[in-house]
Every structure is written in structure tokens, then in C-alpha cells.
Image 1 (cartoon, helix red, strand yellow):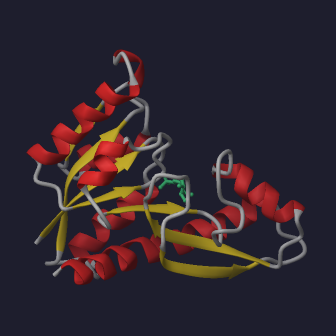
Image 2 (cartoon, helix red, strand yellow):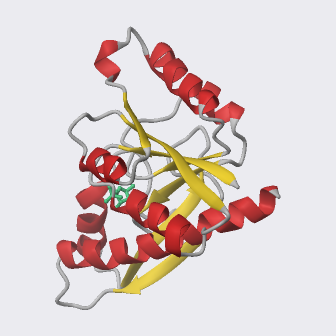
Length: 197
Ligand code: GRF
């Protein structure tokens, strides 16, 4: 059984889809979520995790002198919980180098576009979908990829498309992409687990 940590900052709908898949979906008997970490005490994801009886820890960056000490406490908690795979699911901070080096090919992120399109610094949340609509794209989608030192540059694990109609607003695109995200994140985790077993 692989132990997963999910790092969140917001609503946590991807975290929920991962948890659900460990209970009744493709990760059942394969993986369990042992830890949820948030940098935002108001994240709805924390409520969701508590409802699932998952250990939750919240670290506010402002309470630490620098990025390194902030990431050190996160790394310590990951190690205490004996985490095998780290899933970033709407986590708004960059992970420290030490964490990235400790978990090679074991840190995943989900991005709401067909990377490398609409990726990189500043491309997150509604900005991505607005840029997609602005560019008159006929398709968008979601990508689960490995985390490396730069934003959104790690090797893609799974990418899936959605079609965009002429009348779609950026909110419509966001909704379509999110439902795809909920499918592909558990699938990508399964693929990575198979790679490591
Ligand atoms: C998702 O769109 C994901 O692609 C991005 O942040 C959003 C998180 O949504 N990285 P949620 O918190 O999982 O609902």
C-alpha cells in the first residue's frame, strides 16, 4: 500500500477525487491518503480532509523566517508520515529543492491546461482559462506531470483534452477541465505507483 500526501491551498476537489478513488475507485487497495498539508488555514480542503479522518497539518509561510525553514517542517512531516508519493492539488507555493530532491519522480502536480501551452509563472486558476478563451483555442484540457525545479516543466504523466465551443466562457472551460482533472489525477497516481513497484 503506497502512502500519499496531498498538498492543497483551496477547495480541494482534486484531493477529494483522489481520496474517493482510494476508497471506491482505481486506487482502492493500492494507495491511501495519510496526510493533507495546507498553507492556507481557510482552505475548504481542510474541512474535506477532516471529514475523511485524514491527518491534516496547516503551515502558514509567514510564521517562518525563510522559504528553507518553511519547507524543512513540511519535509519532516512527510517523513514522519512515511509518505511515498506527494500530490500537489491546487497548492499555490513552490516546493523547496530539498523536498524535490528527496522524492525523485514521486511528486506530481496537476495543471488545468494542455502543457506546455498556458503553463509557467502566473498561469494558474482562472488566468489559464481566460487566456485559453482569449486565444480562441478549440480545445483545452488538463495535465498531470512530475514536479521539477521550474514551474510546470516536469515530464507529463497523463494529459486529456476537452472541446471548447464558440459560446463557452472561461467559467465553462474551467468546469469542463475540472471534471477531467478529477478523472486523470487518480489514473496518473496509479501509473506512477506501477512505475515504482
Ligand atoms: C485545479 O484547477 C488544478 O488544476 C490547479 O488548481 C485547481 C485546484 O482545484 N492546480 P481544487 O482545489 O482541487 O478544487
